[in-house]
Image 1 (tube, rainbow, N blue to C red):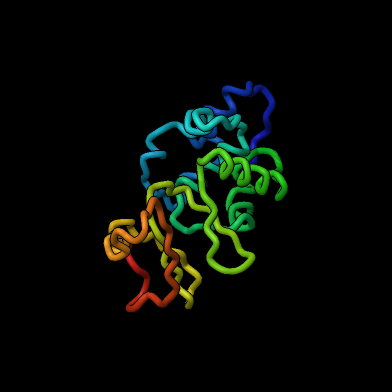
Image 2: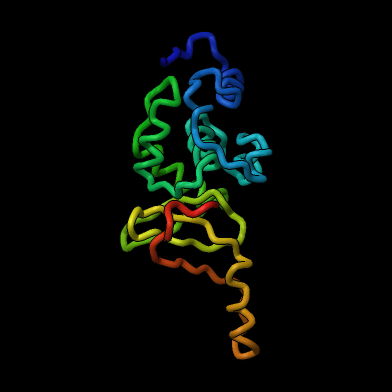
Length: 174
């Protein structure tokens, strides 16, 4: 169900996005509770210097609410009907680039030429299930011993590891 914009001011449109009145399907998304979700998406974008347009807010809200590490096309497919106006692929790509540049989300490269997006900005690593393509967050603490093993020979400031393998016994718990 798409609703027209007649009679809506810009602030009413934003409020309706944040309360999910335009599209009840937004509330059906798999939601991941993060610190960022506790904040208003509009405030999060503004804090990072990103103008909170309705398109950017819907894209950011989707990314903050998923564990799936989607590609740009997957983001487009997921959010294209969440606005009462049409959304182009170019808008999605431009928004993703703006959110990365502002530090709201990060790019994750899991294979050559394929970029995925992750709103989990905490220090963590990734496990890529080569059977399903799923990308699973691995807590940073899991690999902290690596820093110790490098000893005094290297001064490690930060590292990111992507592990490739298969999830044994079904989908891993996150």
